[in-house]
Amino acid sequence: MTRLNWGMIGGGEGSQIGPAHRLGAQADGNFVLAAGALDHDADKGRDYAQRLGVAADRAYGDWREMLAGESAREDRVDLVTVATPNSTHFEITKAFLEGGFNVLCEKPMTMTVEEGEEIVKIAEKTGKICAVNYCYSAYPMVREMREIVRTGQVGKIRLVVSNFSHGHHGDATDADNPRVRWRYDPAMAGVSGQFADCGIHALHMASFIAGDNVRSLSADFASTIASRDLEDDAMVNFRMDGGTVGRLWTSSVAIGRQHGFEIQVFGETGGMRWASEQPNQVYYTPVGGRTQIMEKGEGGLSDEAGRMSRVAIAHPEGFPLAVANIYVDLAASIRGETRDGLPTAEDGVRSMAAVHQAVASAKANGEWVDARPPMYR
Image (cartoon, rainbow, N blue to C red; front, side, top):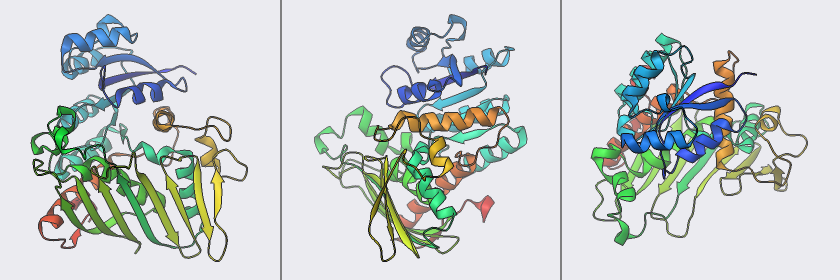
C-alpha cells in the first residue's frame, strides 16, 4: 500500500511531544514525513527537517510558507499535525482545513469554545478530517474497557473516577523555569492551567469509556504556588447525559506521583481500573466475585483490543505506540474506511467547553454549570 505524505508543524528538536508523533506516524508504514515547519526559528526548523530526511524544498520556515508550498504541489501532504503552542492551534488548524488538508491537532484544540465550534463547522463544510490527539484512548486495554461497557458486561455505569496527577511542577524554586512557567501564564496557556493541560485527558477518557458526554460540572481550583496565575490543582465533579456520576482530580504538585493517569469505572454488575503506568492491564471485578487481571495480548479479548496491540503478551506497549494507533486510524480514515474511536473536533470543542465552564464554576465557589458547548445544548 502506498504510504501517505505527512507534514508536521512544531515538534522541533528538543520538544516533548515531537518524537512521539514522528515515531507514531511512521511506526506502521502508513506515513512518510514529507514536509515540515518544525521550529519558530526558521533556520533551525529547516535544518532539523532536512536532518530528518525532508527534502530541502519542503523544509519550511513557518506554517504559512508550508501552507502555500504544499497547496501548490500535486503530491501535497495528506495529513498535517499541529504540535505548536496552544495559542496557535486555532489559526493553523483553521487555515489548513480551509486549504483542503486533513489535520491532527494537539490538545487543547483551541483556546475558546467559539473557536472550537468554528473548527467543527469548517471540518463539516470541507469534508476534511480534524482529529485531536487524545492518544490515551488508543491504548489496547482502554479499548477493551470501552468494549466491556458497550457490551453490557458491567451493566449500566454508575460512577467514573478519573485522575491525572503528577508532581513535576511541585518545586516552587523551579517555578520560573520557562518550560514550566508558560503553563500557568494566561497569555500563553489560556484560562486554565492544569485542568486544560492534563485534566481534559482524564475527562475525555471518562466520556470515551462510558460512551457518554459530560452535561454539567462543579469545580474547585487552587494555585498552590503563589507566583502562578492559573491553577496547579483542580477537583471537578461532573454528571453525564445518561446519569453517570463523575469525580476527577488533576494536579501538577502531587510530589511523588510520576505520570499519575488512571481511571476507575463502576457499573451495576462490575468495576474496572486502568492506569497509564501499567497500561497492559485492566483490573476487573464482577459483583460478588474475585478481582481478575486482564492482560493485553491474552485470549478472549475484543477484536478492538487485538487490533490495537502490536507485540506479544507480557511485552510492554508504551506511549508512542498509543500515538501510533491514532495515526493507524487516521490513515484508514483518509483512505475511506470508517474507524470508530478516533477523537475528533467534536471531542475537542466539548473539552474546551468543559475547561471554560470549570473556570466559571471555580470562580463561583463550585456552582454547578452546564458543561456542553452551545452547539450541543
